[in-house]
Length: 144
Image (cartoon, rainbow, N blue to C red):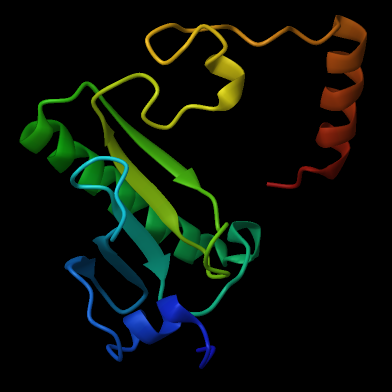
């Protein structure tokens, strides 16, 4: 636990949260500033800053919890899609966002919005030579 980490303090019960799920390793609670109602954060109880630093078994628990939430959100909110993404922008503690998507741009990038919020713009495609190089570089580094 990091004493100055907001999410560690929530996991320790020092700060209240609207808990949705909890076990010995993960905690899911409602985001205070949701993209849509139901927007839930899933965190490991142990402090990890980056999602790639989580132990595989903990990452699996986070994902399993998110999948269960997504199935429930589809029933409750009558949505076709639920987004799962990690950001870690505002709190330096791994957290996955699980968001019921009522609109295609609920969790969109600016790259898709040049035609406005009701449109959908495909970002420019990279040249194949650049794609080949990027894929090659990433393949050399990925160890699963």
